[in-house]
Image (tube, rainbow, N blue to C red; front, side):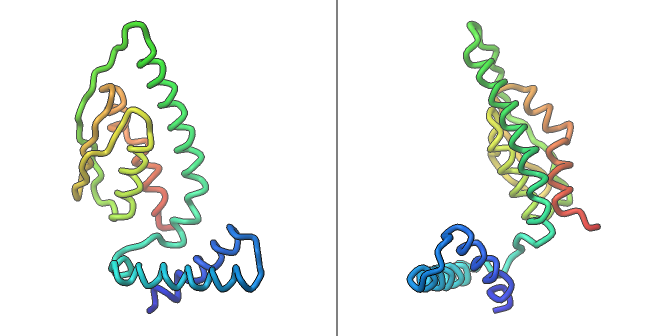
Length: 158
């Protein structure tokens, strides 16, 4: 029940911002939708685990533009390689470490890897993520740790 009390205001705000209508019909539909989401979340036992905390949500606006830039840079690199007269693709499967991260941070990290063109998260373990890349250079870039550092900053305690 505490989860519903904490998250329902976020759902209400999200609904109101997206709908932009304040008629009785939309407010009733919003209340029904929010109730349904809370009920489904409880039945799926999503309320028992770790969720996104407010500090993480407040830091996302700094992370998402950086990720967007990385996606565009990677997309340009993939287009260059694929459209080259002699494509130099060297697919690789590698493991990138993710030690000491919360489940939420690992999911954000794995999804960020998958969103970046040319890389794909294959498997997620407690301390590492198995990835596939079109080029070994993309896997090496993940080993440098720039994305990992950015994801860790999302949950940094200050």
